[in-house]
Length: 142
Image (cartoon, rainbow, N blue to C red; front, side, top):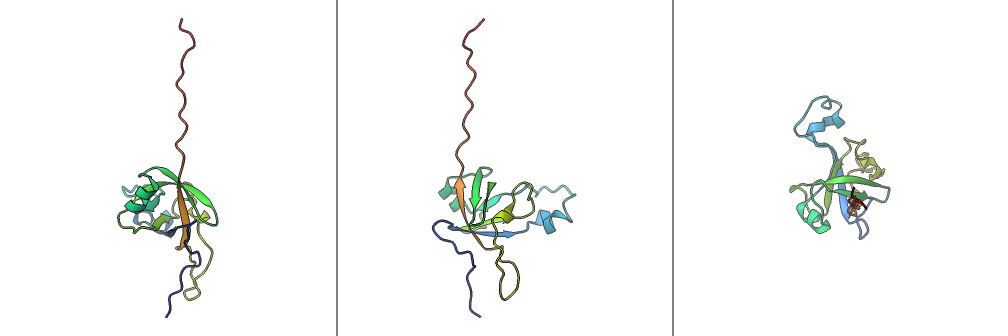
């Protein structure tokens, strides 16, 4: 059987492949595990390999804009040494925090008949630093 690449190809504008899935702490989107406190549960992140995080100049916890051809979301960064360069991972467990589905594609695999949402081309942009609030300096002292 020949390999067909994903419908949503990476390119210069969208150079990173986003794959989506589940995390152990939120099995089945948390329906079965959501009422239990888990030391593993940390909310939604866009997970990157150390090389991509360094290339983008981002660190763990920093908010970034993640964009695909369908939409954009803002998400904090998590660095995972298990990922290879050019591959990012997100779940759909926390849509109230980050609506990952805004990024995914509705194409279907013609063989398996399953959604191809595990293969979306994205770009990640560092957000500008928040403007600092000037310190109050009294104009007169009593």
